[in-house]
Image (cartoon, rainbow, N blue to C red; front, top):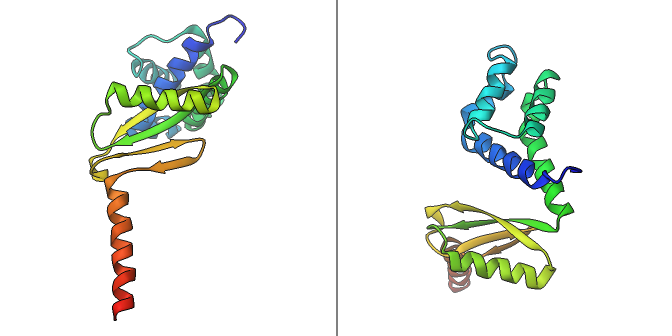
Length: 167
């Protein structure tokens, strides 16, 4: 962005993307063609960010809606954010934990990524109690599964293999 407001627009686009993904009804409203007007869709999107968005993002949303491409908006927002992050040397990672991760864990992960890649990292955190404990960290399609659920699955598979040998 030439005017230096790329960080703001990227932050808004990322928040809007997350809002659309976390509220399935919002995604369905965007995909509907004749049920909800473009004006109302834009108001819903603005409200997902507390009612105010930058002029640039507002104009972009208006363009997408006017061209009948609202159903593609989530992917467009995500692509923009990813391109912006790449441009400024940020990587995106996801972290799944059974409970909310500590600030210390997040700092450690960021430091490791910085040391290994030279890039800063944005970590999207998801809390999923089904993994029981530990965490799953994914960056650049490289997965580190240190969850208790995964460890139990490995033990179960080893137990099955060992019991087959005894039969």
